[in-house]
Amino acid sequence: MVFSSVFFLFTYLPIVLLLYYITPLKLRNLVLLAVNLVFYAWGEPVYILIMFLSIAIDYTHGLLVEKFKGRGEDRKARWVVASSVFFNLALLFFFKYWDFIAGSLAGMGLTFMPRLGLSLPIGISFYTFQTMSYTIDVYRGDARAQRSIVNFGTFVTLFPQLIAGPIIKYKDLGDQIDRRTHTAERFASGVQVFVVGLAKKVLLANNLGMLWDTYKALPAGSLTTAGAWLGVVAFSLQLYFDFSGYSDMAVGLGRMLGFEFGPNFNYPYISRSLTEFWRRWHISLGSWFREYLYIPLGGNRVGRGRLFLNLMVVWAATGIWHGASWNFLLWGLYYGLLLAAEKFFLGRWLERRPVWFQHVYALFFILLGWAIFALEDFAQMGPYLAALFGFAGGGLWDSGFLYYFRAYLPMLLVAVLASTPAGKGVWTRLEETSKKLVLPVLLLLGLLISTCYLVDATYNPFLYFRF
Image 1: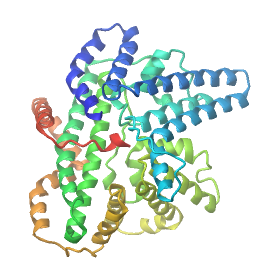
Image 2: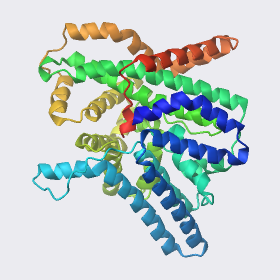
Image 3: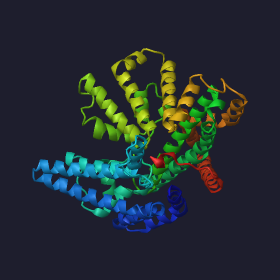
Image 4: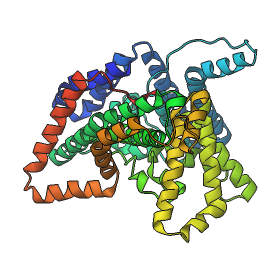
């Protein structure tokens, strides 16, 4: 289903852009809405009905909230907001968590919840959060209710970021939905960002993913300590370039259509603490949970006991948002505990340590966290974590590790460089010294090579589409 939508994107994007730009300004949102719906239906022909329902429910809820607020009937407005939140969470629960809970209960001998075997509508974790925040923003007065259902539908279904984010809040995009600027410079900038994101996804993430899959598939008795660390480093880079690459593609596509989305990543692996890491990683998700869950719970303006509870609730929700599996909940609680420790005492202690120590500390716990995140089977997770700490059945290293390390070393070095500001510095220097000749050639080569790779490759996972 995901591949069908991606195929549609790459096959028909030039036609979509041409159709969009030859359409009069007043009709462009209507054309864009039609394209968005075709894009989604291409991969999810049945679940397009869920999309229609989501648009209709939240559009009417926004109007009702504004109506009751205008009359001074705050209680009714709050009930409408609660209704919108309930609908969106119920939709997410039914499709994403029903079978997970049913299976967990069945494992305890409780069979009153049947497994339904429904596939997960792509992007549901993203667009339900976006529509849920819309009515909340209208209630808070941070946004005005959208009168045009076409414009609101365009916001909900905006295809550049529909199926894998970033999560866009209506208050940040509402003005652009109604009125936006189209320039040749913005379009050209969008093309550049899109191609860079495509190359990150296809050329780096996919190849690093093959290294991770190799170590993930090894039986516990064959896994070495060095191999386990090499595997989790490969996964951490794969996940970063997969998701940040798609986010760049979304930003680039949006810019081609006149939209400006905020950045979703800011070199997270250069962080010196886990608190800093989560300000740099998946920025739109962190912002959403902070604004719509953490702060309403009281944020950090409460006592230590309540602050700890707030952090654990938010991070349990963050973990389970990523998938219906116990390892995601464990991963969320893992970060909740570590971030609470940094808030209470560890952060002040770290500030007095050398900078290199802070980086090593952050990377160690980030990589350990990705191992928990990546391994959904606890029977596999246990031996893998043990191998990371030197309790590997295959010893410290073997010839297999040396082979894969040598084979992937050039790509790992490129990926590490590209995940830091130093990579951007090289790119900026090229822009300044190329006299506007080298950069277009590099972009064209990147587009051609990435397209050829997509056509020929049989390995092309999209990690964040399943969240």
